[in-house]
Length: 287
Image (cartoon, rainbow, N blue to C red; front, side, top):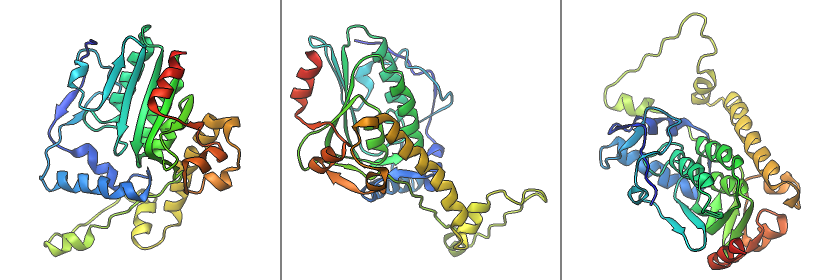
């Protein structure tokens, strides 16, 4: 049993979620309703979520693993650790944030009794910050880390899988991909006007470019916003290219457009390494 402590501050105010309303998303369309529904519940007070805030690079030092609500398993006799990443990808989100997964992975790297790690993934993606954090953590791996995709891993979730040593799908009907980026910009003006709130935004004389892409997007001019999104998207595509490397059997013009693929086609393109059961993967790590 590992003993940890979260060196952090816990608050009941869901402020960190607000940035999700206007952050570039690395997720498939099917994941958006889940993300927006969660935000809506919190903002309307229908769901209380304890949000981790405070020190961002905290280490888990003193919290029992049994307190972590997501599936986490160590098969001690086999020296295998299995971490399950289900649902939307967030950088910070209670125990479900990638900051927690990152800290757990780093601890597993230090444990000499663990010979291999399996990330069991079923996710439509999420925000880019969560992907970036996991990508940096997976760079530090000192033992085999295998991604096992259960049914689907899209966008940021696939990006995390791509940073592992190998990617396996659970069935031929498993889907991966959606390597692309977009943003949903919410315009609150009409809502605020409907409840009698007038908003006046006043900028300093020299702040001519402050929030310019946002302001122009609200006017239907998306060019500057697209320029920003393209930067995130190039980061994403390069991340896949660098981590899959020679395993990719096609150009990014095919796999880097946001399209999704069933496992046999994904295998043909080099986006995954095989279609196997979890037991088969565990056995391969033991060998």
